[in-house]
Length: 248
Image (tube, rainbow, N blue to C red; front, side, top):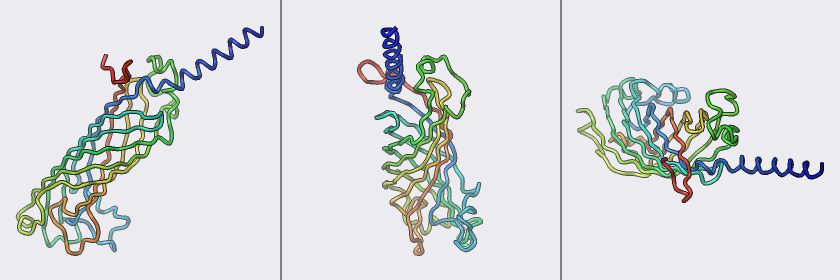
């Protein structure tokens, strides 16, 4: 009886330890995101007196899109590092802004590489299940046990090229360049299966330039900022015996 009890205790310990280490079997992830980009520079925008919390600056006319690809590595179960590359378009116009009479309009094409750290302050419980890792549990069942929530920040750079309308071309302060940016944001993942996640991510970038729209006003008191709100799809890669990702 005592031997059976000790065997049961040992078995429970082994199962618990194995489940706790399952995250190491898939330390690599590849993800892609797509969504709108929102730019806030010296062209367009409203004065603070008539723009409650900046809500009126989020207009369809100013909105463009971005696409984002990432390679991730799990340092710890709740800590990732990722190499990110984002490309897309910003748009800025004085139409419906506080300086409509200027008629400035700019379109900015950009590529942004970044090195980012992710911290998961809420981790799902499904990935610590051995059965789930083998694909025996899929779908949307137990949705609250299938969600991750994380915050992230890092350092990056933005390579950009600006094209202005005729009014802006005459007074442009810069037509392109490369500058540092600091990304930061929050995200959530739905753990759909042992191989795929679906998620949403809201991220802002603080730029060390005030020329991403090709123009710096004498009244400008801060550098440019921009935001992305992306839908993401993540594919999880197995960790091979050598510690590198396995594509088999």
